[in-house]
Length: 200
Image 1: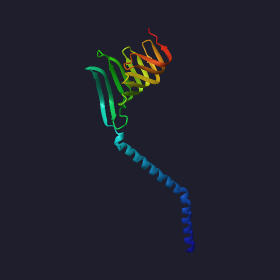
Image 2: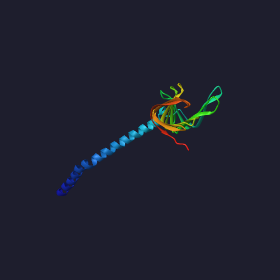
Image 3: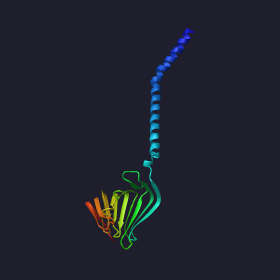
Image 4: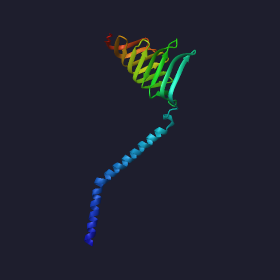
């Protein structure tokens, strides 16, 4: 009987000698991972429920007409607009893209702008269009770039990014561009090359 008890004690000792080496470390690692996961979940939930991170207003299928003396100046269209007024710099976000139509004094469309994403900073009256930005004017000139700013105060559009402008006779490439907001008078800051179009 004494010998049997000694064998059981020996087996118990062998188990506890092996357990810390193989299982205790794994158990601790799992516990830490669970705690970190819980912390991340709590942070995500907190961020989602924090009123300061939520839009003040959400508009679906927006169409806004800006007028001056009963004459249309421009029309802004977007499938989704999120307004954030809780920020120090309140802004409007257009996560599904934007279309803007500029009108001349006679009421005709003078140019149009489209982009897959845009943001409008209310205090600075500054628009930023990003991702596949295209501007077309009445001269059939087409501007393509990945980022474009529209400064309402100075009535101009500009970019520091790579641009291409296609006219009826050529395609001009370069870095940076400035133009009036209707894109009827423009200048590429650093031209990189010109490709002439052939017409039959």
